[in-house]
Image: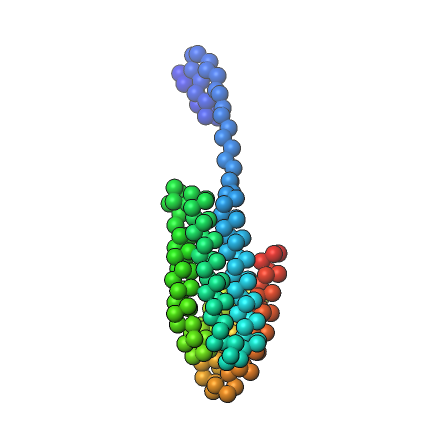
Length: 196
């Protein structure tokens, strides 16, 4: 006769049941944390630079500021490409650093070639796009956390983004200063939220 009791089959011969406990641990990779940290730092620095440029925007400044953005994107590209090589992401088949590096090289060359047009003619449209991205981020945070402040931020971002597209050029530089202060405040608040 055979009796099954608590997962152990017992018969005429008594068999000892050896149990093996396997403990699974979540291993967090230091590489991903370092890469995310570098990306976040550049995100905040770029936001602060854009805010400061908008606050002090004049036609003379905007005609020369494009070289600063060429340098920023070139540095980001070099950091991402070195990270891809040093961390041996190609072995892990993780090509995100390579893609970001190549995109930043392309953006740096594009800004170098068309910087005057970008910063004198297209800047209101580009800042408007940035404000719509900020609005999208805030509205998703509102749906996730139900914090009213995120809804207010998204509405303000959308209104400022629409104004930047349709406002006449005579009022543009005043609106740039308002948007620059707004972006710096949002970057600081987002940084505080990120640190928490």
